[in-house]
Image (tube, rainbow, N blue to C red; front, side, top):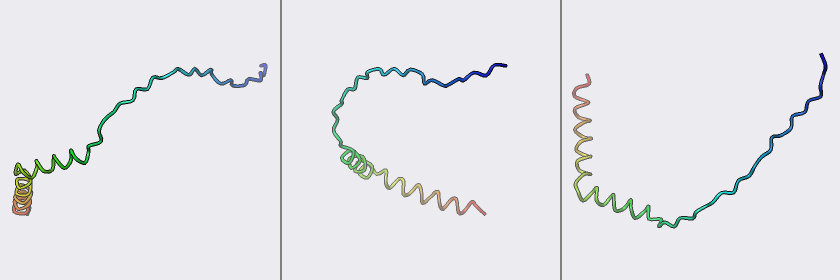
Amino acid sequence: MPTENTTLMPATVTVEPQILVAQKFKDTLGDDFAKAWNNFVDSGQLWALIIGLALGWIFGKLLNF
């Protein structure tokens, strides 16, 4: 059984050029959130959420014995 001195050689690494495309966008996350919140309140969905949570809690307490 012959013994060989084997060394691990790193594989060749090829570097391929990448094309980066810059995109411009407006950072209006705060404005979008404010607009969505105002629409949520103005359309009455906030009251529907509060009433639904209250009724769900009441029925949950009544039916859970």
